[in-house]
Each structure stands twice: as C-alpha cells, then as structure tokens.
Length: 223
Ligand SMILES: *[C@@H]1O[C@H](CO)[C@@H](O)[C@H](O)[C@H]1NC(C)=O
Image 1 (cartoon, helix red, strand yellow):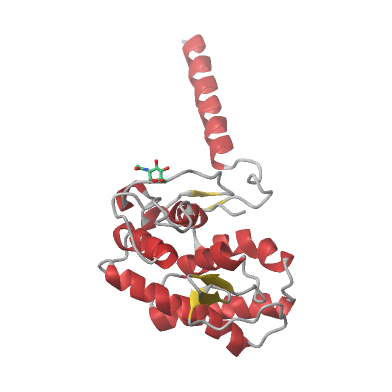
Image 2 (cartoon, rainbow, N blue to C red):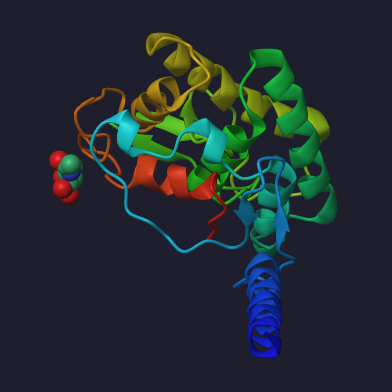
C-alpha cells in the first residue's frame, strides 16, 4: 500500500513539474517574455514555417499571435534603420488610425509594412513595370520620402493608409470575410497583382514567399 502511495505521489509530482516546465519555458528564442494569448496559445519568437498551396493550408486567423506581442517582436527592427523615436511612435499611431478607417486588422498592417520596408519611413521608392511603388507599404500611388526621417504624423499616416486602402480593396476581391480564405489570397494580390488560388506561394513574377512570410509574421515570427 505504502509503495503504491509513494508511486502515486511521485507520478503526480512529476506530472506537475512536467506541466509547469511546458507552460513556462525559459524566455523565448529571442529572449522575450513568453506569454499566452486569450486562446491559451503559446506566444514566443516562432521558427519559420513554409506554407504553400490554397488558403486552407495557411494558418487561419484564430491561431494568430496578439497584436501587442507582434509589435514588441518587431520593435527592435523598427528602430534599427534610420528611424528616429518619433517615427516609431507615429507608425504605431498610424497603424491604429488606418486600421479603424479601413477595417483592416492591425497585425496585417504591421506585417505588410515589415515585409515591404522593415518599417523604415525613409525607404526608397522602387519601380515595378515602370510604375513607382513608394513608402512604408511600397504601393503604387502612395507617397514616399526616400532617405528622410523625423517625418510628421500626417506624412507617416498617409503612407500607411495608402497601403491599407489598397489592401482593403484586395480583401474585397476575395469575399471580405475575416478568415484565411479572404486574407491570404488578398495578400498574394497585394504583392503580385493577380492570384493563383491553387497555390498562394506561386509568386506570379513577384515574391514567391510573400504570403508564407506574412503567415509567419502574424503567428509570431520576425526577421
Ligand atoms: C507552389 O509554388 C511554389 C513556387 O513555385 C512551389 O515551390 C511549391 O511547391 C508549390 N506548392 C504547391 C502545393 O503546389
């Protein structure tokens, strides 16, 4: 009897310690605090996963990391380029404004911005097919301030909202649902201008990994 009790106790204790160590891994890969979101999902600097095929192969919106976590994960990169402190503060404000104005999730705005410009407000203007794509969101018809930093809130907001307006249009082309079925093809359209819905990692002449990169960004990966 005593033997069985001892065995039971040891097993229970071991289970408790195992559970504790699983729930509280020592600081994440990037030395960030590890926390859980409202769904109880572990949030930590995640390793890159390759996604391809149709939208259902990509992580649906319910599995994404929290915006605050994502912001903190990207904050170092936002300050690493030529941005001064107010540029970063104004970017944060611009994301809030444009999210509210166009009803686009903040994680997608931040993700697209990191993908396009690493959040450098002075990013160069690039040309695709002779057309300029400018600014934080690298979009056609959007303002850009190549080589400039210490911009005003209005200038930064105009760059972010320009891209968000484009992306809003892309979401409308794919059913305007708050689900991966809308979001991932819309991201492909934002990058390539057209979409192979059977394989969203078909770059159509643009960046093949674009949608996969965004899927990783919104689930807690950064570079
Ligand atoms: C999608 O296209 C990419 C790029 O051409 C390719 O590497 C990948 O294997 C394709 N995936 C599927 C599921 O067809």
